[in-house]
Length: 117
Length: 110
Image (cartoon, rainbow over all chains, first blue to last red; front, side, top):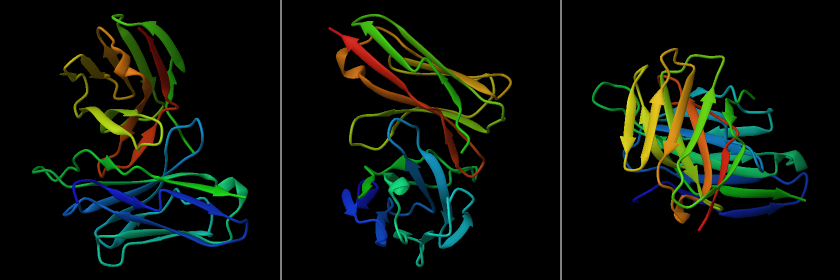
């Protein structure tokens, strides 16, 4: 597609429910990032993939958060046993290496707004 | 998690005025980027800076990568109503991981 696509756009989950958020990056983009944006805050890094390899997961807030990108394209962020503090917008971004090997700018999707009730 | 110190938190200006916002960090970054985010949308890249001391323009926008690699500023000249939104600075690592500021909310009165 032309841009980063995320689904669903909105998700309401009951506390304790598991959720799965999907990200379709821009075709050919090697790098994929997940960010969490709380209301009124800037996005905060969760995890980073280069192709199918998860190279940095230092931002995942707990072991209830799990991300995968099995074929190096589509990625899924899974949150188990959701809590109210998980309510936020979850943003996905992708980028491609430039000619010098350095990543070019990241393009963001519209995000998934998760509300845990 | 770590966030950059971005100021001001909000600005209310008249159409046609110039705007300036800045960002500081205790850490060094490889890149500095400025994004704009409209309600219900993801951040959209405005300007990317790759070298310490670099000054880059994009239309009415001008941004600089501080010489210490710990700060950046964004200027918007001759503001127009569609400049309304939230502006974020972000410092980037070599592989593209971004650390964002808290955002500057810009309101432009016609």
